[in-house]
Image (cartoon, rainbow over all chains, first blue to last red):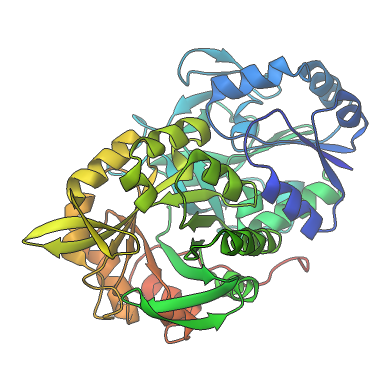
Amino acid sequence: MIAIVDYGVGNLFSLAASLRHLGLESTVTGDADAIARAERIILPGVGAFGDAITKLRATGLVPTLDRAVAGGTPLLGICLGMQLLFEKSGEYGDWAGLSYLAGYVAPLAGDIPPALKVPQMGWNALEILDEKEPLLKYTRPGEHVYYVHSYYVKGCENSLKAGSRYGVFVPGVVRAGNVWGAQFHPEKSGTAGLAMLKAFGEGVG
Amino acid sequence: MITKRIIPCLDIRGGRVVKGRNFEGVRDVDSPVALAQYYNTQGADELVFYDITASAEGRGLFTDVLTGVAREVFIPLTVGGNINSVDDFERVLGCGADKVSVNTGAVRTPSLIEAAARKYGNQCVVLSMDIKRVDGQFRVFAKGGREDTGIDALEWARRGAESGAGELVVNSIDTDGVRDGFDLEMLAAICERVRVPVIASGGAGRMEHFKALFQTLPGVDAGLAASIFHYKEVGIPALKKYLRAQGIEMRIGGEPYGPEI
């Protein structure tokens, strides 16, 4: 059973539908016991970092997630859900993240040429840096994935597995131990994205 | 680098796909779910569904169609038509839409863009504009292109982006259905005024029109069309291969790889 953490942020329809399409059992839940029992956890998220981390902390689920991560349960953060896994963000203020991964969240604007639009919205080719990364076992280098984001992760060299070029090298897939992150939306990235969700659901690591 | 996007548009009425020429003389084309799956395997980068029903019953059929598509097709889905309130955003987002496009609803209630952007984020709000030349001015038309609002389109585009629209669809009524190419003059004028992604619509008849669009106007992010795709006059795989050969970044997607999914 995969628990999709419901903390009032974003649209979980497509994520749940994509797992169902793959024949993977999942539940959209904000219940601590259900999350603690889950074999795998997905942390979704869209919108602003501060709003999302505030809502997540307000649910009281953070200690449950901390224990699950410490206990070895595979956790996948998607889009803003990936950014929450890092130490901090400067999006509209200074916010502390979950600190499962080393690195911080910074705006694309200023780091990329002004001709490039913010948010990065669309399909970008994924360059794979670690061919042994199990989440990418069904993914070919150069396959396109769908990004929608104005901020990106910096200082994550230790966990960087794949990424895309958008004026800078944007981390696309990160992983340390049993914690994974995807900056793009696998549930909106066609067969390329479904292949990653399948790999996650089958058991990675 | 980020690719240019190719987007088929599906007009939906009574739960079926239709396409008019110059918005009139609508003809039935195909089943929405079947057509969406077909486009997904062909490598469409995104799908736009436009609800052109007027009745409440039609609206229910439309959300059923949307749910059916979102359960089977895992690429970005944009929904438009009959979007007049934040409640309408809620209704279609709950059925699996990723982006919602407002047109006449934003003309009637300009504050809708800001209200929706605040609640769902700019990336979720698309301002769709039907534009026609009137007395040497680009003018916004409402109600499916039937009503001249008197609004200056360039100013409307700028204000829309400023209010929180994360993307613009620019549909030229002057070139729609004519199949002689996109309205490059109109699109250039819009691109000069906004920094958000711009989707060009209206006028595609041949593959060369997409090449001219992307090579002439680097500020345009996507090309949208309906009938040339529905009637298979232009195939998306062939179009993308052609554009890639011209040096335009394209996602070649849809081909099976890895496990059966």
